Image (cartoon, rainbow, N blue to C red; front, side, top):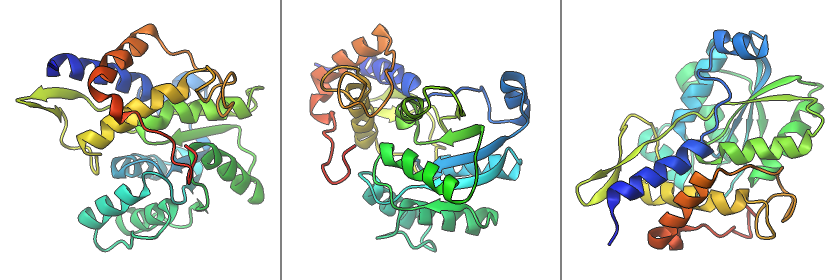
Length: 266
């Protein structure tokens, strides 16, 4: 029988690992303390992020933490859930059948009056999120040295590894900031989120599905996305504590391990 307290603990271990933040806060002070810069050349907001992540990016833009904003995301494996969430929370925004980047741009314009971001709306997975975004920068004659990246927290670690594969020479400094760090706890006979203020948060089943799908992808073996496997990402050092948490959760959530959808190959 599943011990929900133990499951919650292990979910949080995986979540903390995936939710990569290179600075403790997305502020001018934090950037200056760690990188010696007051702002980045570009902030890239990736479409897999939930609405809460859009608000984090909007604050960074209004705080002038980047010279340009680029929004990247077409229609991928989480887009249908995003259409539903946006339609329920922001009916004024046309969501269904629209790309993630276009939906986010509409949201940022309506809520924050953020106009004219660069838009990349053709990518369908983590890998071409990055390559298409970089192509968009190139097409606009932007050669950044420092990039802030915001992805859904469940995919932030993999996004970083994708950049590291492409920039082995460290020619671009990538600054990760996972928009939220969710905590799960036992609530009676089910798992619940400790914080109910994460706007647009996945339901628990989808959240666990995303977490459980990431660990096999991050593994550097013949089945993973690392150099020894599909070579989609740089090698990631996964702590034993995280692997043990994943193995424990497989006993109860093995069916949640997400198989890549061939339409999106992610």
